[in-house]
Image (tube, rainbow, N blue to C red; front, side):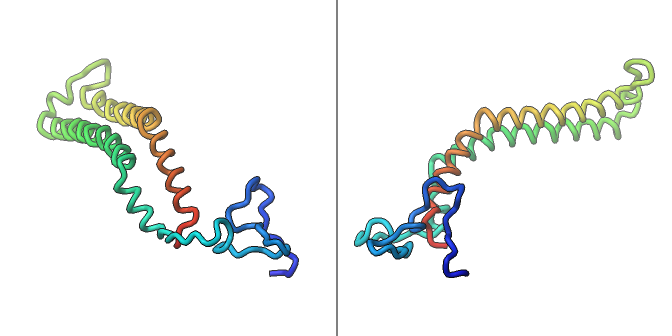
Length: 152
């Protein structure tokens, strides 16, 4: 690195602790000594922080909201798909019955599978937006703040 090169980030309004700080003589201060000097506190590792977050009530709540939607929706869709496959193989007469013109029950049910896929995707995105995204973003923000000074 060049002797006169600066490590300042022009897009960073407030430098991170340890960056750009100088002692009284104008020399840069090492990140370990920047900030509150003399106050020794152990710095947790990123793994410890993530274990702590994983055990937190906020994380459990986000996971609970996810599971309460995904498991029933996946089960319902799987049963609907299996019913379609079983009906197609065991009841060919029923599936060949005309519904409207050249469209029979099998074609209508097959199109229903596509419609169900799109509706389930919409419902999942809506559920995530309304019930999980804000809590997950808050949790992510808190985790990023905690890991900012963590030992890697």
